[in-house]
Image (cartoon, rainbow, N blue to C red):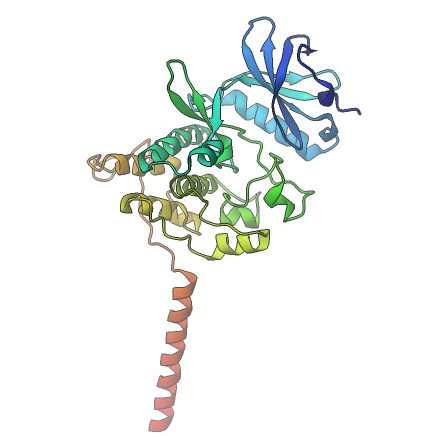
Length: 337
């Protein structure tokens, strides 16, 4: 099938109701067009799956999952979804709110690291959208600055909107090193996904998003991700086995929050995004009472602080010490016999 999306041009009408105004972005499997709804005259962003992907059931399933999620989710920090459907030839599309602004990735490249308070506010807004998704059993799995859009709102303010829910399963036909550089939108970025997601993208829960929010927060403050390498193998070793460099640009309170988000074991992270939101709000306002201190729970949860897991390096030294003690004890016992 010829990819009809390659032939779109300004003025063309798609599906009998959307006039193409231009191209907003392009990926390996999708294209996002600026369009106008002819009936309402409302500007929309029209996301379409390329015809060349229709033969790949995994691509079609991811797109349908995103469309389904978009229709269910309601949050001021998500782009509103107006319509989903299929064009002639069976090419699926999603018509969404057309946003004006830039992604946090673009802003980071342009302006460099953000002040701590601004970075926290950006992540708080994203986290509220993620919490709404988790309440419906939807896990994003690909949170990163490129998927967080700093949208201009009426009156001149700005707000963060999370993009691409439900469209983040890993590609099955890409080599490991291609995952580091391809601009495809169909898999989680290795720089931002959790250790458990690196091992198996299918066997993760909502806590993988908590890791990713911690990575985003680290990156916004430091100007770089906590883990970086030129190959997937090296990057995976860092994510799964090394501590991130200290976030010296942050306050001690924020450092503790980020550190907990980046715990290797999911059980050692915040148990819910609501708990992370409460912790970040306390960084902004230290006088705010914690859920435990207030005698209740925030957003319907009770948050306990688990003991941080032992680092690999400390574990090695402790085991070595136990072995030495045992050897000395056995030696002493043999000498006394």
